[in-house]
Length: 352
Image (cartoon, rainbow, N blue to C red; front, side, top):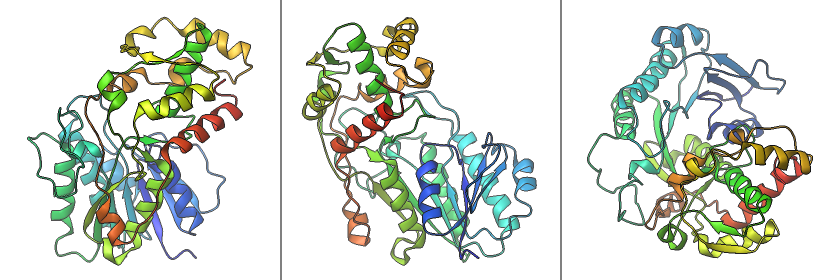
């Protein structure tokens, strides 16, 4: 029997896929909690429960029999629009409903982990203080991450379980089910440039092209989360988690262009969510010509996300000294990993 049983709340989100893999690799029992979970799981040690996290009574009913849960990994997020202020009451209620249901059912709860993000430091702010540090002062609210962590801190007082929180940057991965992914969005943009016999222009702002950036590989995040949940040193702590590999798009863009056999173009700011509205016929031609797996363009790329990400106009990177000093030393070469994921999309016949 597994020593630990994980409940992953929001089990179909960006942070959960590789976390499930990491936990199963370490012989955990894993329960995925989601509003729309897979119908069945053929993976040993993995099961799913259906629940709407906004439904307090529904969460309680769904988890009534889950007495063996030892760790909660909260990866969920209320629906949101790119770049705006996210709903504080809904995000807090979802976390509270999960905590209420788990504490009522579990008899040996050890740890609760909360996945936050770089919006803790508010990446929407101009002239963001960099590198961002875990002990940076909070900005003017609202910020749902503040309310969620405050809830978790207060809830943990006088209880035996501990908590931790991760603050990843933009998460990237080989994730065909998720169009809000800079990797597949880059690939779709490159395919469109090739289809129209154009060089691979950078469609973001000139400042973003030159800014110092960091992002977070999903597997790197998963390994860090498992470390936090099992390390004595990480109890009741929050950590920045990135690849620990800074880059500038102006360094990486020529490598991406070469991957697609395209000349690297100019910086040409475009609002892709508008420019790509009429490109479905072009995508159909691309799919047919390259014998790709059938797909809609909107299932491959999120242009609104690209507008937000490539519209950032200042350095955006974090200080990961704390997590390294405390014992997690993972590093990812971001440029090489992006290219490797692009190749996986190609090998899977999802991108040309």
